[in-house]
Amino acid sequence: MASKMSERLNFKSVEELLGVVNEEAAMDIEIYKISGFKGHPFKVVDDEKMQELVESIKINGVLSPVLIRPTGMDTYEMISGHRRLHAAQLAGLTAIPSIIREMTDDEAVIAMVDANIQREELLPSEKAFAYKMKMEAIKNQGKRSDLTSSQNETKLRADEKLAQEAGESRAQIQRFIRLTELIPELLEYVDKKRISFTIGVDISHLDKEIQKWLFEYIRDNGLVKPKQIALLREACKTGIMTEGKLIAILNDSQPGRIPSTKNLISEKKLRKYFPADYTEEDMRSVIVDLLEQWSQGKESE
Image (tube, rainbow, N blue to C red; front, side, top):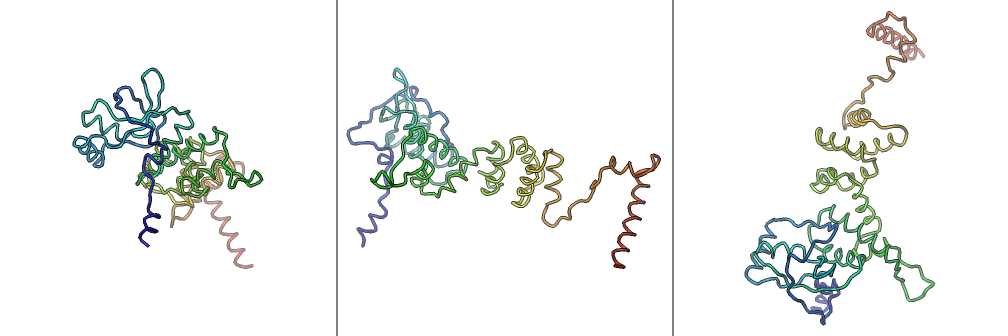
């Protein structure tokens, strides 16, 4: 029983995730020769955990080597180990144990994402851009994995392969990738849980200019509900959206609020039914009288 339990809990090490083989030996590489991974989606934060890592490195050194790839004459790009590299710098190290491996751009992206995606407490934005990068890398490789050895069997699509490796559903992978279509301000709201993940996905379908107006509205007025975003998206399909129209839709659809009936008919349209010298108050009085007569007629029916 114990052995079966240990088999189920046999998590892969970082070396196994990166495919590091025993023959690959680590060597000390000067830190200034190593640049960060271009478009690295995972944040390196100077928080309490970083400070703990710094203190550990001061005492024990860097226990697990970083993975880098050569980019030129004695220069390298970090694949896995951005946090360790940053902590090593804070600890005063000038070199860091590294495994050097030749990789294509797509291989490097996949290795970088795989090494980081299993970290705990990842932000939605980190997962979103990591999944997008890996999806594009899988597509670029042009490789499809057979479900079986038979060539007649259905082959995995890029999103299916990514979902299988990430332990997520295809739909959830696609939702995360949708978040990359948010403007930075709204994506930060998702990370801070001021906007829910689901609402963030819905908002991502809106034009960037409309997203800017929406951000300003949320910043000044507070949270929005899924129904409000649904109404906004529907309105965008049926006509041109303006900032004023957006505000009116969101205000009128506030929970518990009676929708405004102001300006149902523009003054310009009303003018053609009234003498030129009629004031706004005169027109309003006539309209109220006519509505009253109409209402009484409905009651008598």
